[in-house]
Length: 287
Image (cartoon, rainbow, N blue to C red; front, top):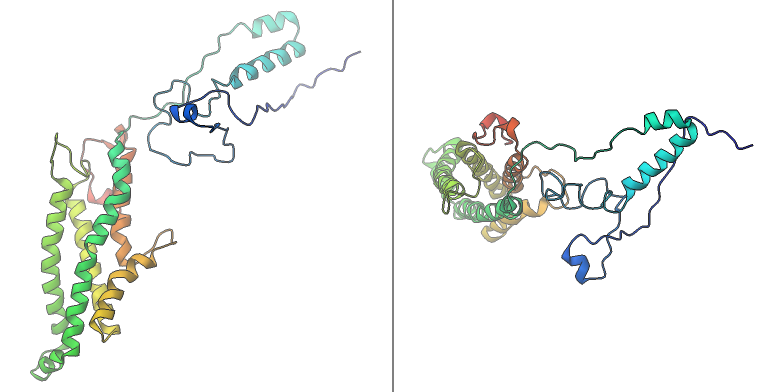
């Protein structure tokens, strides 16, 4: 006679490596055939928010369209029929199978926000490079021309010398930070700004703290070099180049990029729990 099936059955469904369904116009115009991408637990490029928001069945890779769920249900019913008698199977199979996507909280969908989180931070990082280069050049010039020694002879203390440079540079960067905050928060068209959901105080604090980093970094470079050109060049480029390849670089030239990038990410998937229409507080920000 036939062997009785075990009560605990495990099986595997193996479909062809390429799907039959074409999901976009690119696959229609090219020879590209979408695969299941089982080696990637998450999408290679994530735009935030629910995945395949326009599809009721989850979209790519198409477990519904490719018949995966149909076959899975058919195999389950066949195994159940073999394990149960006819009466039990009729009672068991008297149900309706429904499918819906996993719920996702309300989110903010902004394609511009996704794009700007990459290039806006680097633009502002580059914009501050001139400030640190110019400050380093001026301090080294004062050292090379012996002006610092003359002021020391007249009784100027060393801490007073650095405090004066700090106050002078801080005043300039304070104005620059205010102007950059206005550019990031000003509503130029249709009431939309570059960072519409970030608190102005938080944005200003990030820019101002970055300015303080620049001042101290320029002070460091000015003590290491005696050539104005060499000191200014190193001060302007050693920071951005040092962050290459590091997951979370701590150099002052890259802190602004990471701060603004994280500031954008804070709002990319904001839902009702985060009170999306309420400005973010400084305590919630990532400085």
